[in-house]
Structures are given as structure tokens and as C-alpha cells.
Length: 312
Ligand code: UDP
Ligand code: MG
Image (cartoon, rainbow, N blue to C red; front, side, top):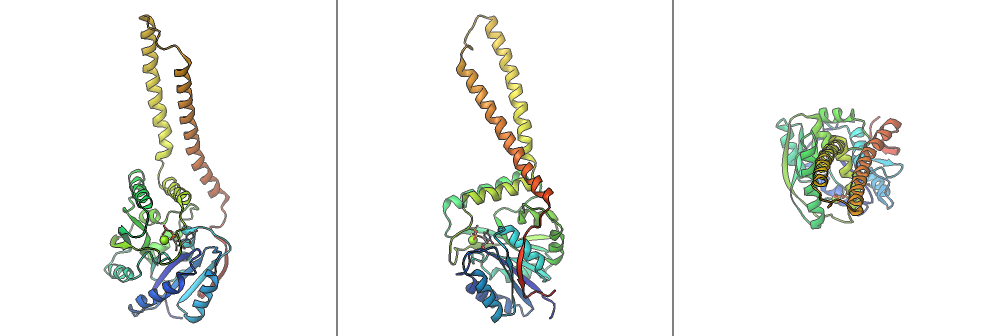
């Protein structure tokens, strides 16, 4: 088989209704390049007919390669598996729900040919998403930007093109709680963006409810920042300083015959406040500790049931 020029990676979790359309649109676009390409689909433990459809597509079209996971391992891990198996000189990550327009890939390829090694897609607008999702996402990207050391471009998702050199660098990053956007920024290389309007889902519903979004955000933050750990230190210094000043004030008041500081209510409120602060700090340490434990166990990132269409 000839060497593959472009690999398009699409993680799929219950995307049976989107796959045929995805294949059609990708084929239409990629055939325009006149070069060899593959579409790498990852079935992330879907409960619907996603794997069967992948098999059917593969039987009809040799460009389609797929990896079938033994269970659901999550979006970021599915993308990672795609990167491990992809063979192209340039690799594109795209969502299977057609929220990322495949047509943009041609624009990304142009930038790649001009010498950029990472071309990320910046969302100038989002269609068909609730204001809640839009605003929490906006807040999240800005928070990450401000508290992490890597400068992750604002309003970018995983939709991006990466050069083989970048993919190889990222394959060496074995962390378990993965935040692909942060990892691409971390490796460096020459990067640029192209803007697009994020579309509505072609079919189906989002698999990122609030609970998963929070998990995703905490993976991103703990993966790239120690700021939460330092919060306890800052709070500790702040509260200690305040209580020294308060002690002086109380002594002063008592000496001048003022008895305003009697009473359980004040004590109770202060004790509860400090208890709360301590529990939060402990929880933050726990978040990091849990992740360290996950890393130390050293389990494989994912388990593959079957990989079809790839050269050995
Ligand atoms: N996805 C996945 N595993 C999961 C959840 C999602 O592979 O556990 C895939 C999903 O099929 C889609 C992409 O990740 O191709 C983005 O997910 P989704 O569209 O639900 O997220 P949103 O676009 O709403 O942020
Ligand atoms: Mg989506």
C-alpha cells in the first residue's frame, strides 16, 4: 500500500446517524486534494450500531480504517488512539457529529503546506448551542488561559491539523487525564489558526453534559497548572494575617472596656468558615492526589478490541 498523506481522525460515541454523512463529506473534500488519505474512526464503546456501520463503510471504501474499543474510554483517549494508529504525514482531528465543517480541512492543508506544523480551528461563533454552554465554554477558555503556563489559543476545540513531527512528539506524552489542546500547545512548533463557525450537530445529542464538562475542565486545569494548589497557601497567609490583626483589635477593645466581642455566633461563623476553607483545600489536594494515583498504576490508556484496515 502506498504511503498515506493525510489522516483524518474522528472519535465516535453513539454516532450511527452521523457516520454515513461524515464519510460522504470527508470523501468529497479529501478527493479534491488528489493525494492519499485515510479516515480513522474510533468506536468509543458505543451502545448503538456505530461499530456495525464502521464495518460496512470499511467494506465499501478502503479509505476507512477503524478502531473498536473494548468499552467507553472518553473522547480525549479515543483521539489519542487515533493518533497512535494514524499513518499520515499530516493528521486532522475532527468531531464525528459534523459540528466541525470538513471543508475547513482544505484551508488547514494550505497553511500546512505553507510551513505551519499546527493549524487549529478557532470558533468565531457557535450555532445551535445553549447560551449556558457558550458562556461556560467562554469562561473556561479564559480561565485556562490565565492560570496555566501554556498559552492555549482561546475558543479552539480539538478540530486541528498537526504535522507528523507534532504527532510523534505528542505520542510520547503518556498522561492519563488528557487535554489534547493543551498538549498541542505544550509541544510548541510553528502554529497558526483559521476561523470558522461551529455548526449544529448533524444528528444526535451532545455527550458532554455539565458533569462531564466539569471533569474535562478539572483535567485541563490540573494537567497544566499548579495554581489551585497554591490557593490554599494564599488563603492561609491571608486568613492568618487577618486573625493577627483581629486579635490586636480584640485586645485593644477589651482594654478600653468594650465587650462587643462576646458571643458564640461570631465564633461559630469563624470556625465554620475556616472548616470550609480547609475542606476545599483538602479537596484540591485530593484532585491532584487521585490523578497521581491514576498515573502510578500505569494502566494502558485504552483497550482495543479490534483494529481494522491498518498496515502492521
Ligand atoms: N465522543 C467520544 N467519546 C465520548 C464522548 C464523545 O468519542 O465519551 C465523541 C463524539 O462522538 C463526538 C466528539 O467526541 O465525535 C465530541 O463529542 P460531542 O459532540 O458530544 O461534544 P460537544 O461537541 O457537544 O462538545
Ligand atoms: Mg459535538
